[in-house]
Image (cartoon, rainbow, N blue to C red; front, side, top):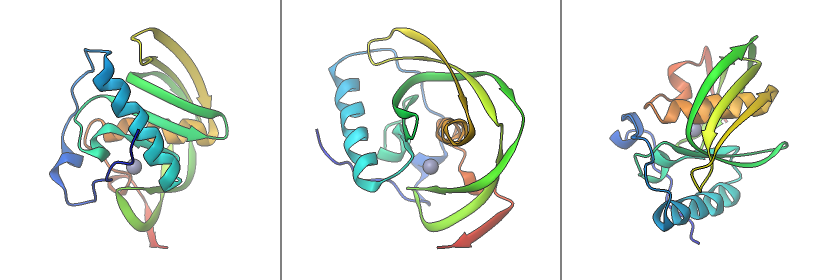
Length: 150
Ligand code: ZN
């Protein structure tokens, strides 16, 4: 387990589309373990693989509802709307207001490749949407209606 360096805004790796995870092997587990160490140390609500320089569809989310690993995640359905503040470990010193769905239904695989579904609402849903955007090269600042320096 190790802390990985979090890529910052301006690095092209944040703007690329990630590839599906095909091998649920030790390489993936090491990546996920390192992402956990990194998000805990940085006190983030989540972290996506491209933020540590890996173009794979894997994210972790760390919120009040718990700590989650989502591999090859897909939002199947969404409902409602919420506006709220977001920050990003790859965009230091700023936060912005972003509109997100209030509820999402997510399909994903765990670190062993097992398929699952999950429903999330409120800030948990927001964190999922933010992290999934990273997998397609989208940052919250692309969607924010208001951005402020912290
Ligand atoms: Zn982010």
